[in-house]
Amino acid sequence: MYQVLYRKWRPKTFADVVGQPHVTETLKNEIQSGRIAHAYLFTGSRGTGKTTCAKIFSKAVNCLNPINGDPCGQCEICRGIDDESIMDIVEMDAASNRKIEDIRDLMEEIRYTPAQAKYRVFIVDEVHMLTQEAFNALLKTLEEPPSYVLFILATTEPHKLPATILSRCQRFDFHRIQPRAIADRLKFIAAQEDGDIDDEAAFMIARLADGGMRDAISLLDQAMGRSKQVNALTVCETVGIAGTGYINEIAEHIANKDSEALMRLINELYSNSKDMLRLCDELIGYFRNIMILCTVKNSDGLIMASDAELSELKQHASKFTAPQSIAILNTLQTAYEIMSRGVNKRVEMETVLIRICGISENPCTDDSGNKSAATASVRAVDNSGAINALLSRVEALERALRSGMSAVSSVRTGTIPILGSTSEPGEKSETDVSKASVSVSELSNAAKPFAQWNQALELLQTVNKPAYSVLADSRAYINGKYLLIDTNGFGRDMLRNSQVKESIRGIIKQIAGIDCRLGPYSPSGGVQYNKNPNTVSPVDAIKQRAAEAGIEVEEN
Image (spheres, rainbow, N blue to C red):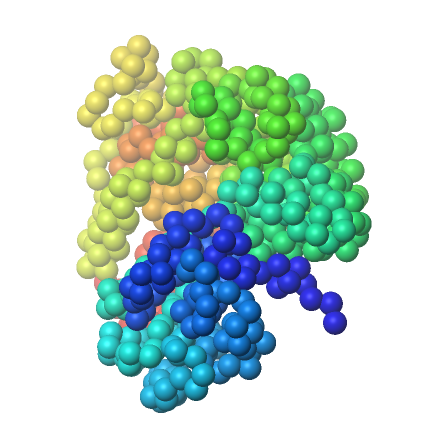
């Protein structure tokens, strides 16, 4: 029966393990010196060698003729462990044996001394899946097991383990394997299997594997099923990705702002059944490399690419500026999130590429010298402190509504402050100083409803949920470059926050192409607040949540 390559080429000794010298050297030294701990914890992402090293270690501590800390592989113990005829090495999958009853069965088995080997080794994979009760049952045994018992715990999520478990183990963190090491290993395996893989294909698989050797060898196995001579085209056809050639062509068209050529290329890829979500992910990775080349003088070790790919990347990087590459990345990642929610992926991909073609070489400033909405919105989304503050204000509003209080703040009438600047309340911006205030009634009376406001609110929900929760039932009106928002007093307070303003301006720029200034909607000199009929008001939302929780609400 055919044995898949990742099992066939699983390392037999520590010397065969790729990319983890800090782990393998320490384990070998412990075995040679006899300083063997009773419990080990191996952590790291998938396919980095945790279970492999656990199996090698279990053989090495029991081997009759160890060689410099490695198992000999020839003695009866090593052969018995390999063919699973020796029952002193126990592997347990905590994902399917996670209850306290399973741990009690394990503790019963620990009482028995080894039948043939020196140690009984218990390898517990995905240990973070154990229940809290199971962890509690394991604690005492893990701290003081019998002298003939060793524990090796393996997990991809060590943060889920109780501190009491972590403190009882020697911890080894397995790193993601470097692309060059993965590529070299793939070329070696392909040669041993009477095949061949070129550098470009090996690096492509290394990128797709994301630091996991098992994933990389599985992809090689799949590609060699198509052809013994594996090249980049073979990998693309096997995995279903667009590949370097198409990505370079897309980048070239973006640099030339050739939207027509991009649409034809997307149509070709879609006709060839290429996944648009995966294409977006490839473009994110590509423009991440462009950003690195635009911002870092020495990019060695930061970019996963062959020499030929790196040379072509540098040529394309010369056609983009650092702010432009950052703006493109931001746009692509927003599109990726939207596509992940199940929208028409082809249409979204076409739309985002057209938007990218419109990004200027210096998107950090617009024609008037103001900060770009796109760049500002990134800063607003990433500012967790401001989001936490807004969440607190939303909670305060809900408490006020429950107690029947009115959350109305004073609003200036007669003039409209220019809210498009980046200054905080009480701080005069350059725009406020250089331009006089505009009559609120004149602007509001001549304003027309902004038809795309509901779409803007949907996008605001994805980047700034606290702001959305306050502005969800608002309406918006447009008058030239002014966007006037009809909202309650709390919403007007929210709009004075510079990060909220810039988030909204960025969204309006994205969906309507307008560099707008924001202000309150107040026709005829007075405040008029009309709720958006397509949204649920905060009061109704609270009443609905109370009803779902079985709480009676009395209206006064």
